[in-house]
Image (spheres, rainbow, N blue to C red):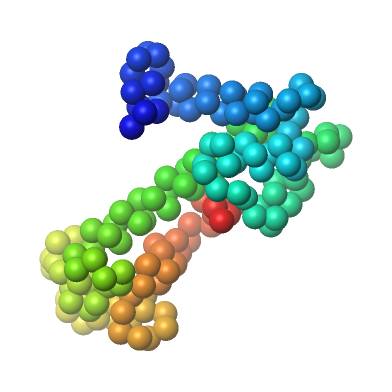
Length: 168
């Protein structure tokens, strides 16, 4: 909410405002004005921007992608990484909202009945047999419920390009 208010007051578009925030985070974390972020600097920047500490695997992946002649992540690389991370973060948020909309009983899982109701809205002419088969396919552990993990896995099927940077 506050970020949107700042965008409106500053007259900047969402993309310009976001880029400005990323540049400020980069500059704040590049305390020695080296022109790059080392491992620790990068971790702090991610905490500032996304509110979580990146895993060792994520940081290793980012540092391995840095150009060989640099000691860390340049501003340009950082902006590209943040753009990719923002897209992945947005997608994950959308998946969570969709699951929550389908979970009308707020139980943290989808029953076959929840699944039927959701499909009756999004694909009313889909045969019952297809809905049941889809439910069984998504219910990975065959417990008769679709957990968020099951749902997220099904929604992410084929989304390899968005999962280049892990969120956790």
